[in-house]
Image (cartoon, rainbow, N blue to C red; front, side, top):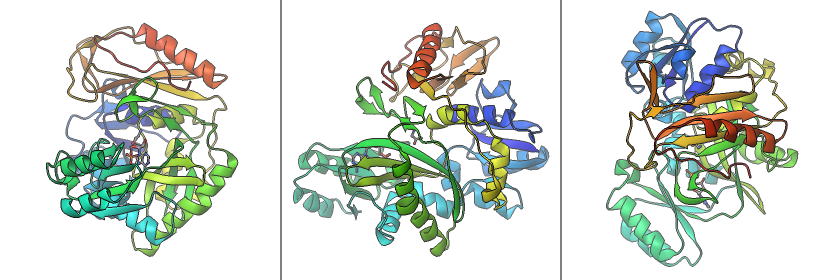
Length: 416
Ligand code: AMP
Ligand code: GLY
């Protein structure tokens, strides 16, 4: 079966890596891909949110399954467009992708179906938000309801801070229309974990649990980013936590969506806070996490294409999934200036060849002649397996030390 992957990040390179190990894979295309995916398939230049182009490629190349990496095309309805054209695609419809693209919608759904999450209020009027925040004496978190490239969440120290955040989002529109509504919620305390489920309506399969590192700097300091690294599995998610997530979060949410007439198919990413009162939902994403996917997929032993096909065909219960027992850790190397504006076109040297137990997943990279140069904020996801998490960390950082590009930033404390 020929496969088309939509996207250009480390997550998409990791998807391609796992697809290459799938028995049923024919030709592999990536729209638009990066220098790493070009080694595994054919990159097709173009905008990943251009459905007409994606449909055209799917028809021209006789694609049997399209897999969507990023949230933007999902939220804009790429799955609806493919299904209307009678083409097979893995991902949620635009209505179901609102679990990520509209935090107010997700919050209301959770409240209605008693799914554990932070208490929250939703506002589109700054004055009302200000009055409400002023009455709160504990710390709150202010979130733009729409898609804001992972930057729309402001964890506030005190009410004055939170009022300022609400003003910046609702009035100054620093996140554009994504900030037409805000969610003001209670600040939860605990450790965070990422759980990704492959979903077909009611049926789901939970991938191995991961943890990502969202802050830019060592010791969880500095601004939030898309993710500076990840590891899998995480000891934080015990069997007991998994059972709680299944029964209190995943099953009720999927049933709620079916009941609301918007059944979910694709990956549902649960961003969780493990609180003293049990796991609570911080956010949903409608796609694989990046860089969680890099760590998770390096450990996948069974056939990814077969798993995704099973979900699309509604026979997920038949899927057999197996994992490498070795933990994996991914260190993101980012451009100078990330997560703000970055300079691109910087040459990268020292890239090692892929090995059975270590892969440098490309994110913002591009090939120029014989050279690979930077082409984005997050550049590489250096990912290694190890006998223990400490061993995986050592191997990943050994590789990081060999790779050079000017201004590279990475955390040195991942998985520590
Ligand atoms: P989100 O994109 O909603 O996952 O938020 C980004 C990050 O903000 C999360 O990974 C948490 O570190 C933090 N965060 C979001 N919501 C809360 C909350 N209610 N309490 C504490 N931290 C939060
Ligand atoms: N690593 C967080 C995300 O993919 O949203």
